[in-house]
Image (cartoon, rainbow, N blue to C red; front, side, top):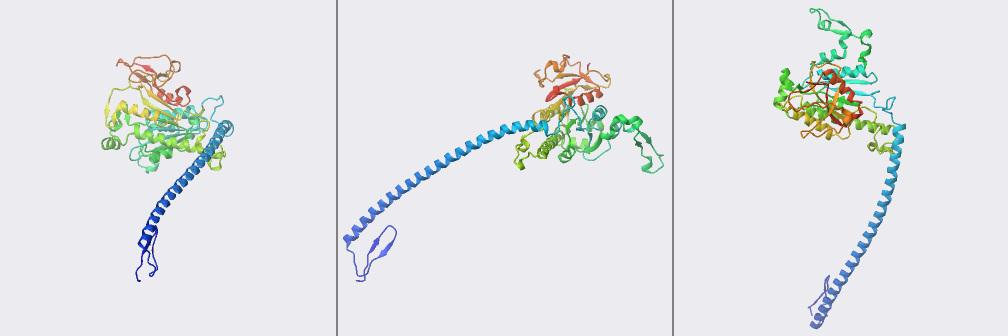
Amino acid sequence: SGQYSLHRSPNSILPRAFHNVVPTSRLQSSSNDDNFNDNGNKNNNKSDDDDAADDEATRLQKKAQELRAQIRQMEEQIGTDRRARSSFQQQLDSQLLPSDEGDDGEKSLKNKRVLVLGANGRLGSMITRHLLRTHPELSEVVAAVHYVGQSTTRGWGRLSYEVGAEDGIGSLGPAWSSEEERNASFRYDPRVMDGYNLNKLRIVEVELLDPVQVRTITEGVDAVIFCATDFEGNRPRAIASLNAAFLFRAVASPTKGRVEIEGLRSSLEGLVGEVGERRWKEREAVGVGVGNGGLGGGMGLKPNEKNGPTQFILVSTSPDAFGEFETPFGEFNGLKRQAEKIVSEEFPSLTYSILQMGLYDERVEEGLEICREKSLDQEGNSEGGMSDESVGSLRPSIWDGKRKKRINRRDAARAAVEALLDEDLVNQKVQVFTAVR
């Protein structure tokens, strides 16, 4: 008849044959049946979804149980490996790694390399001399001459004099001769200089505010004595010596270039990097590094360093040596205390000793007994943690404002060198002096 009806299904619209007309009642019935089927399909789909979700949850629970079992197995294996590493470390430290022990099992400087930062200063040059003269077992003393901005010969004469380089056979050409001929020169004289051990002295220049330079000079170093400073006494070196480079730095950027703070931190970072790298290489050398799957675990194992020297000696100033003094770099005593805090708190992997020297006084006799007293905070509590037996019973008053702890610089140099091997001073802060006047 040319007419057609539409049969609706959930998913399609299909034409019927043109000559087959579907009655209205059938259309209504078909529509009801389709609605029923739609609802049924929805219920069935929901049931199927619930079943699928239950299956997925069951699968995940099973997977979680398998993972827990694997974790427990791994933990048991790790515990076994840790016990094996502990036992292996003891054997390795005692048999494979080079021992730092002296002949009597005490701390030793044998075959060690010590870096003196600030060796061109009065105290630093004396420390260098004392190391060379009293510890011939050292492999090398590295004397670092600190400069600011531009290399200079300032301080070389003092260092040359102290170590005895000028005790040799000298020659000096006439003033009218060529520059090379008229410069003073000295030749080694074995009759005089045999015990000076100058063959173990290496002099380097360094800008302590340049971390790259500092990292370079700490290569191969076992211990550092830090006596570099921006001050002569409690006066900034820029003012005391009218040094243009120091003065410009003090005025232009007083907090960005302080030897006591930034220079100190660069030195500590350089030493930490060197110690860590050496430990790693020692482990690899005996075949226990991470790369070959050995028990050593690389940096997890430390070599036997308990009989080596204290790694960092900071020469500081006793709180009563000078009064409060404002400088372009900050308050003098505040800078010293900040530096001490950097050493004791920011680099826990290093052993250290902080020596708060009394007022340097050349009128004090040289060679007196060195007194070490527990450092006290502002409330009078001990900061060093040393026993009274370790530091002696001498307790002069430092609060009366009249007497001060004093020390001859040569005795201060002796104290700094002795601290390298003093077990009682490891990780301690003490005041050091020889007289109270």
